[in-house]
Image 1 (cartoon, one colour):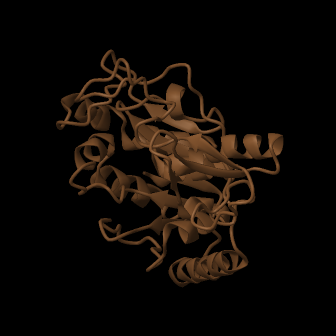
Image 2 (cartoon, rainbow, N blue to C red; image 1 turned 120 degrees about the vertical axis):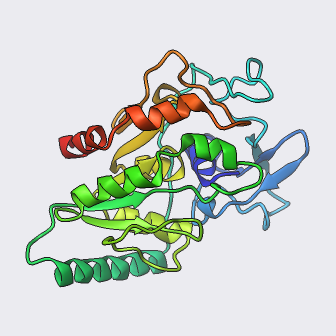
Length: 281
């Protein structure tokens, strides 16, 4: 399960907890009687830790798992393509940080500002939190899906070079990330700490996915690359700038083979177009 999916369900969990405050709300697979824990749920007062439940209190399980995602139309999907549920619209979720996560994020922000001052004799306009590559880009099961969703390293590099002299860009990296020269990239940060850093930034820039949902939960502005794989009508937020390849084949939802239509999206959605959307907000 992806962190974006985990975050999506937190808004429903909050509604259920408000309606049934005495219940222990957990996320899982009802038919298998399995509950799942995610670091996204840490510190969340609306979701109980399924690994440490009080058996004397009622439990409310939300049926939400890889085989039951509300944005997927499972009846129309095939073995190679997802078809999207056009009736679904996400509600911004919630993430709750520990005091230590807040403290660490502020320290990293201070380091980022020192990096800027070392390289520039002027003030930056805003702080941009940048994500350029999914952690699953080389995953055996999910790599093709994420290759189709990807905007491409050169596009992110050229966009960053157009902005880095005006904006303090914090590049969120992981073991699969190809770093971009001239950007501040904190080392050895986990997902939650990255989210806390985003909470101290002004805008999120990156592909549709986990951090887009985090930006929504934190009420941050964002410019997201949707390409032609999935539509912002199904999974995007109206207060974000969602860049979608409007084509008869979009959204393709192809996850079994490298998609030529998604390659067209990478070409059609230019660096200049992306930059215009960023400067717009």
